Picture (cartoon, rainbow, N blue to C red):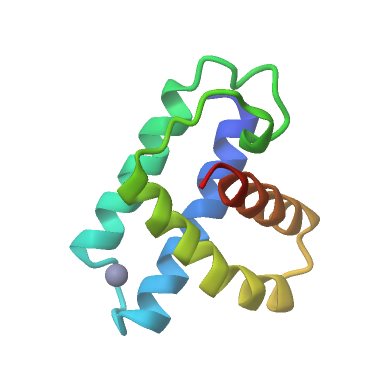
Length: 107
Ligand SMILES: [Zn+2]
């Protein structure tokens, strides 16, 4: 697996887990959150440009469908700032802003 896929997969996984824990009050992922996570992983793995681009925001292909896009956006907007506050991960910060920026632009 490409390192970038692993990194993004890890970050999305952290966010969705935390979202479900805080917003849905679950100690393990509920079905909706699990579906969302599986969806994002599939999209990452099927991305044809994964080896060449730094982040999904630079991508011309808007590969998320509307429903899942809205959900991952909500997860990131809700959990992103909390995680940035407790994690000093530059990658997380970067990923979060790029992602939100991109998806605001196309809606
Ligand atoms: Zn949930």
